[in-house]
Amino acid sequence: MSVCGRRICEIEWKREMLGHGFPMRYAHGIPPDYGSPLIIREMMRPWMHPPMKNKIVISDVTDTALWVAALRAREGKRANGVFQDPLASILAGVRGEKIARSFPNSAAVEWAVVIRTSALDLLIAEALQSGIDTVINLGAGLDTRPYRMKVPKDIRWIEIDFPKLVELKDSALAGHIPSCTVERIGLNLLDRSARNAFLANIGSRSRKVMLIAEGVIPYFSNQDAANLAEDLRAIASFQHWVLDFDNAGARKMPNSWAKRLQAAPFVFQVQDWFKFFEECGWKGSKVVTSAAESERLNRPYPFSFPFGLLMHALPREMSRRILTVSGAVLLDKQSNIEPDKLCNAK
Image (cartoon, rainbow, N blue to C red; front, side):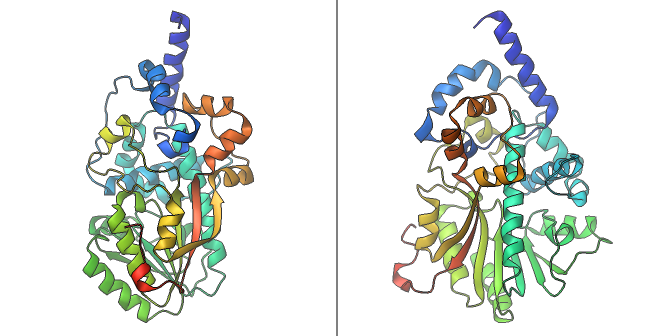
């Protein structure tokens, strides 16, 4: 490559760094079926991972909630924003924005978060019209849907996450009025006995429950995810579960992500995401892929460097197929599975 070409790449990278600050998730890049990320990485190595200044270290998984809130806040400030989330900037704070800025090659993952949020909004709004009386948001983080969406006022909305996130949220949102009753519970979802005791109590006092888990499953091991799915299925009133999915298959996290997320790694690894949950008693009834939501919103994949340029260089059907491996799904509980055959994917 010429000196001139190298300089253009360096300038393009600097623009990305000055722009947004949140990397593209590997699943939204090039799955193994469509090319070798290792080859691409070697080609782009001089420009993909230059030294970074003022890198903010993720101290634990709760920092990722600040990170995502900062990205939602940015979307709300766009003139043509897909959604408005004025409380997101209050919740993200300075640290959330610094974390977002510390990640390279940001535009594609910022796009992915917006598309994921919108797709989940769509499924949640639709499910709320089906007789739901209780919503339980597992690992709610700094989500503000009861404040920014039109939720029926008679809905009981329960959020569960680590105590320090609940404390932050209670303090930051004091004085802001949600559209329905909101309760927050400080609880580690990996504490299985405490989790099950609390959920069983809620389930016994609810008629029809919708569960939400946005950006949660990647931080669970396969065993923990199977336990959660099986435990949720055992509660009679728990009927629907809305999640984001990544069905690009098991793979190693890119080094640039692994270094930044050492304290909060992605550990959920399965070859077939839908098969895993179906074998645990939850089957997809409606799927919104990133490709479909992008087209519905007329929000194409960004021309970010390097993955965005590559995606736009691919044939349209191939790039669209890549984007169908991620999105959001409404799972319905299956009642016709024998208990001894549940969660064979564990």
